[in-house]
Image 1 (cartoon, rainbow, N blue to C red):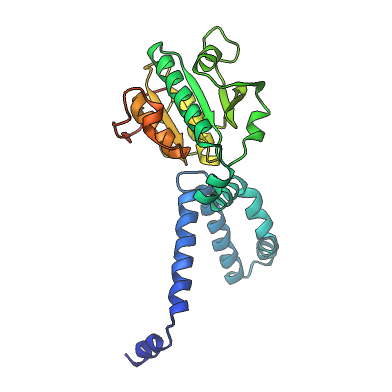
Image 2: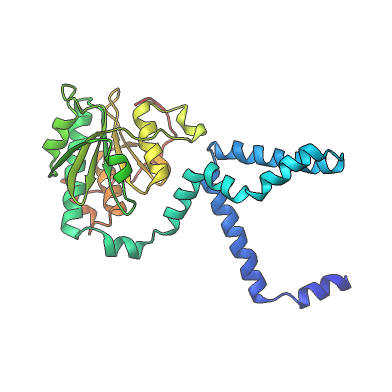
Amino acid sequence: MRLLLELLRGFRLRDLLDVALVAFLLYRVFLVFRGTLAVQILAGLGLLMALRAVAHEADLPGMGFILDNFWTVWVLALVVLFQPELRQALAQTGRSRLLQRLSGEGSAERSHVVGEVVRAAESLGAKRIGALIVVERTSGLRNYAELGVPVDAALSAELLGSLFLPASPLHDGAVFIQEGRVSVAGCFLPLSRNLQLARALGTRHRAALGLAEETDAVVVVVSEETGGISLAVEGRIEMGLDTASLGRRLAELLAAPGPAAVSRGGLLAGVRRLSVRGKA
């Protein structure tokens, strides 16, 4: 009891702040690694640590020497092994609403982007034509855009619809919208590493979720089988959206001035975050 009182007496506000920051950091690391192959890699690293302890206790100099030298370069090993996760975590850390407003597009341009994407998704869904539409936010997409075919054209629903027609050679890839223009088409996106969700998704939805896990881009998906509309952002996917809820979500995510400007019928329907089911 006396020891506890002494500990409490020496506890300072900065100690509470320190504990809170460490807990928050560990929580964010868990969120980044959850559902990815990084969890298995961490388990492997834990096994190596246990083997190192066993080697020293059992007086196995050869195994102890190998494992000791491995841990001398553990920082470099972690950077190599967890490069995608570290990149995602650092990118998320550098994002803020203030920076998005300072570096984003004008209000009128954002409203135009939202309106044209909603019209394109509505038209493509009615025709059961699959589509992947990527709208860039603060994370640069140059690494992914370089694999596509340059377009650099003014954004319109009609242009988006023509790019995804089955007769188009670019219909299987994704279309990128950057700075309010259609920059490239026919891009191939990384598939999701989320093992919990990827099994229930088709290729198109997995690709959308994969890009949303690595960047802050907003990805609109139109299912070729059902004509349903989905939206992937920040490592999550929202399925079963109608045009009203899609417009509202895009307006929120792109910081458009108001949802009423991007929907003819008014954006009154809420976003339904459904459990993932169905194929692309």
